[in-house]
Image (tube, rainbow, N blue to C red; front, side, top):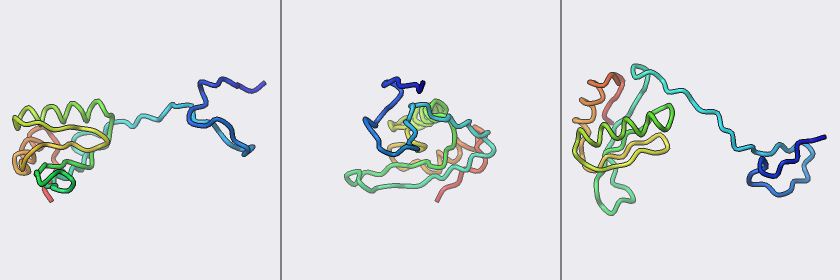
Amino acid sequence: MKNNDWKSRLNVVYSTNPDFQYETGSEEKTETLPKEKQQLRISLDKRNRGGKMVSLITGFIGKEEDLQALGKLLKVKCGVGGSAKEGEIIIQGDFRNKLQELLHKEGYVKARVL
């Protein structure tokens, strides 16, 4: 007998496709790459921010918890606000050179300013 648990069938009520597989909500978690192998890009962004400038760090590959920890460290060292989600770290203001120095000190040797 098929497993017909409704809780395991997320986002779909009914499908006529005989080969359809329900989403069970379990996602594969990516392992965080070592600091030496992370290729982080630091850029200045002004789009959709009401004219305010932010330093944007992209290219992080790893767990969300590690991204949050790195984001918090950078925000504290720069003394400003920001956020870290979906592989991006946003730091309020233009801190590109300071962020590059901080990332190099932390072991992210491939971090570069664009």
